[in-house]
Length: 383
Length: 140
Image (cartoon, rainbow over all chains, first blue to last red; front, top):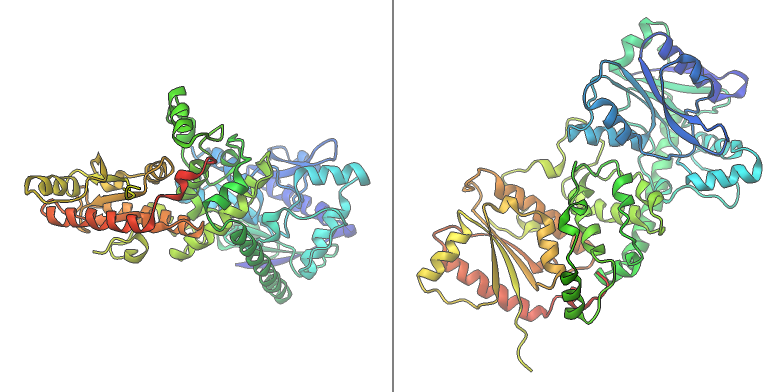
């Protein structure tokens, strides 16, 4: 792992990064680039697959929103092993999603170059659009995040907050990324640290894109440590409040009964890995008789049905690999705390296997392996 | 008022526990009739959704029976079942649900007596616990 300090021209880190990305395309370090690009309206950003280096001119690698999870996009782009090297400018949770999906053989890492961005967090798409509507542009929000990355404390204008999942994210660093855009601890109007992992070192150096002679910055490590500590504290507060509210299944249903069973959380989830979901099969297209029997048995039943089984089954199937990106929250039309449910419950389940999703591409997901001598207490089955 | 009679849905593997249950019958072991058996080829075929469906639709307990470790007819199905059950129990217990309504037990084809004892014991425990609280919830 080697580093380079990129001097920022005209106090514009985004323009400087565009220059770097353009060079990656021009020098064929990557054949195509997946990177957030500003919408013509200026009200938001979308991931864009770019082939023509000229189209890099208005990309925004530091986009403060995450409309979709690139983990899923990169699965589509890499799973059939196309004959092209894909560079992807993605946030830390997206890198972790890529790694989880690679473990499930739904993403291929061979021809993928992950360019991870140090992430202070993101805003809800609609919050960002509203801020642009009010202020004319979103620069103040981006600046707030960049300043936060320098000091470890986010300061954004009143009336707007980070997404809940981002506010409690204790994984702001894109570990395992091939190239890291290092913002933490740096005054990004002057400099950005680019950290290049072993895999891309030769390509980047031989093609003269970066001089990798800098030492990794200590200041960055300090800010990261401080940020992780604060985020972990915040996370534990949110977990505590959720556990208090959801102390039993009635509590869960009190919180989740307004679920409309749209399955948006499942669609938005980068980790939900089943190619065919049981909730979209005839198994859950009940006959009228079934509803009538339920109503008869209990005197009455909430319609539509199957809220509890949906959320509990989704937990059982994929919570071990939940990376906590919170796209389920953003996708929920009823504003339910889906991500908080998954993070809170997932924390306990992942701890049981000492498993951290996205930590190591060599690990096997807990649902895909076993040990012969384990879990006697947890499963209740003694040998 | 009549004593509460728990209803147990049991998912039993073909090669061990189902055959063990059969042996319990042919050797005239006595056990309470509170159990409804679903015959599967392997405990590894039990998806957690089956267990959840049973509990949400009114079972008071779920018994999953498989071959002892190292004895699985398909080599590793019971280990996979063990992981899934451990994950499900961890999820439910964190949501304040009594995970001890779910029993995973290794009972071989020759352990008819153990099968009868297990069911007897489970019925006793569930009687202590009372009805599954999900049964009285109209929002599920």
